[in-house]
Length: 504
Image (cartoon, rainbow, N blue to C red; front, side, top):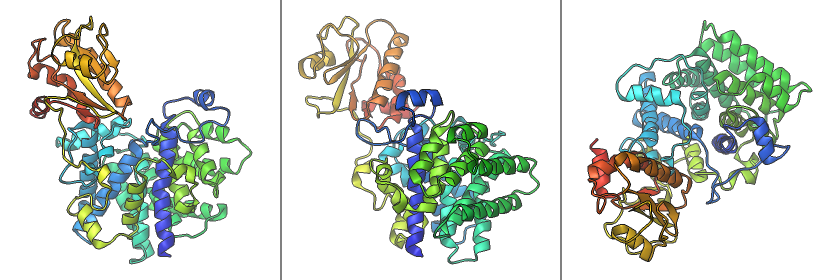
């Protein structure tokens, strides 16, 4: 049974990340646009980046931090109170918040922040960002959001307590699942529909983890039982009947003759929690033994394709296990091995030393060195004479492209800068004009550079002290223009710029 549990834990996390990555490519596209781009079947395979990696969104990032917070609570205290668990999950979400908004350095309170690729902004939801900003600065969270930003990150809670149910009573483990899922959801989303959807999803995953083979009839029983326990855990909610009704509608549509797209159109677009879960339930019920069919149906619609794909992937992954996921959805998935490792941690398959190092000491024990910040922050060297094949030299220029002095001259002589071209990429260099006016005239060109760098993540950009030589500006004037570049792991800045930005 332990091997089956581990396989299902891995399937749940990888399945969610796979649905997230498949849907992330079309998250803000209409169905019409998806079909025009990918053909009549819609998107059916990953759209990898230039490195061949299929990137996931904030949904899977936050799922990983949910796992970190939960496991940190139990690594610190084997029998933590509900308040302790919530505090640890809050701390983990604040670490994720740092990866979206802060200087790119690992945090002492989070081993996940030692993983370089976690520091990437992947269309984070405003409700999560605003709520966590309030928490960071000591303000009460105040919203009535039923957005899907809570339910899309909840899966680790169902996995963890399902694994623990072997050591405690089944009913107690279900109660803990419901309570912790509700608390985790309310960290950022205060509407009851978000709470109901999150508790229900965690309980469905809990049940799927503990049943070896699941067919449609069994899944109906799982859903019915999870719904009863959800209503008991969130009693007297005025939103309960609305949630019950949309889940029942999803079940009815799954057994109807309506096409996938017609049915999903009736359920909504998935931007809010109850619609996300309903679409996931529909897709799982219709494709109960078909991982690919479930994922493809869950993302090809108008709306929040990555979140509906993530939740559907979590559930179908918990049903079929990792061994039931086709190779095409494992290969090239971002942070695949890290996801497997965290799934093993949740399932109780990791050794005590690894658990202590990661979740009590907050060190990335057992993670490939290439994923870590090996030498801390790297700055642009003072004197660059050579570049690697994927490196780009960023220099200050004039609009006429007369690369006659300073870094511009180095760019022309060594790195392919083109005489007469004053802006943008040229050879292994990138020109930012600094000699056409004041700071306000430089900013749009810096903004353009940051956008280019964010899209060319296979390159490393070395920014020189642009504008601080012949153009006559001070570091304190130029550095703030590069504030957003701190969020990009492939941009190196002069040490003087970084120190100014950190002191702001």
